[in-house]
Length: 137
Image (cartoon, rainbow, N blue to C red):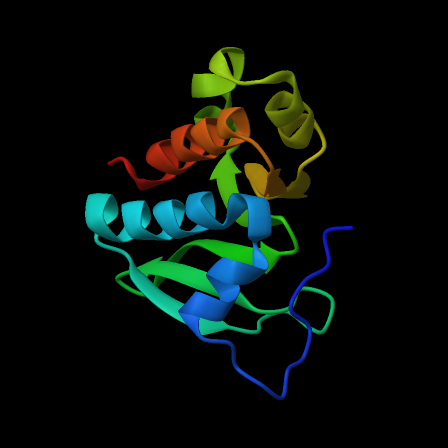
């Protein structure tokens, strides 16, 4: 249903990744543009972490990973890590789906990783909220 771009032999263009996201192609494009313009992140098309993740756009600032945005058929998934304090600072303002993603995060030091699939405007707004927390000083 939400297949990823898994052919490691062919690096997709940004346009191919946008098109692959189908119904959420505009949001995929807007999120990547927003991260770069609002937080001065460097974008790079990558195939990280093994074959099941597929192609995505990594966003780094001063060599620090902000997130990876993986293109999916009619969606995209943002993989990111926040501290428990950062998650807690916005938890009550988020959609139930977003709260469940946070509740089921992969623990890591004082926080954890989430894989957040964006399929609607509400989810898009929530991931922007989380990324704003991640990028704020």
